[in-house]
Amino acid sequence: MTVSRILTMKGRAVVTVAPEQTLHEVALLLSTKGIGAVVVSSGVSQVLGIISERDLVHAIAEKGAVALDDMVALHMTERVVTATEKTTINSLMQHMTSGRFRHVPVVEEGSLVGLVSIGDVVKHRLEEFEAEQRALKDYIATA
Ligand code: AMP
Image (cartoon, rainbow, N blue to C red; front, side, top):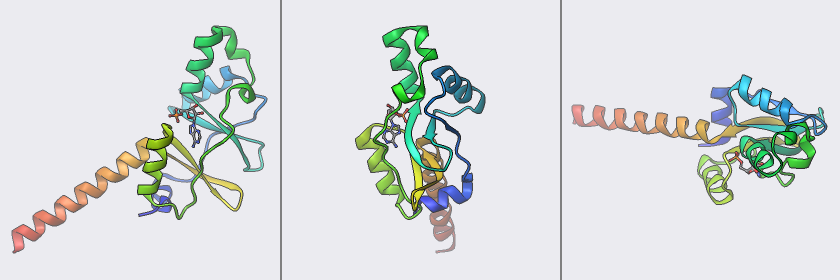
């Protein structure tokens, strides 16, 4: 099973911010959209970084509320681990576990085409387990 299956189910829209925007703007986006991270992009689908709720917490813990006026570029992670549509869900889960992050942007030919969160992966795995259980029950009932 690949990333493409998850994107087909959840959609390909990704919330992005520019590196010059402020942490306060990011906090507003995360809160209103009910998400945990935004991709930092130049506006031409190029991934420049990622900033998550964890980065906001670190910045505020370190500098206090004034950190909310800082630019995204100061606090984003620049070395972003990305996936392609062909990346398997297993490999995605391994990357998330070993890298200790919960969001992976999906990039095709240098362009951002989606984002998969740990929540999407868990939802997908649960649906797979339920389908397997149904198939097993049907098999037992008809055997
Ligand atoms: P998260 O678990 O996604 O809230 O992120 C935890 C930390 O990892 C934060 O510092 C993020 O900026 C960073 N991060 C999130 N996603 C990625 C990713 N795909 N590649 C590299 N770093 C990431």
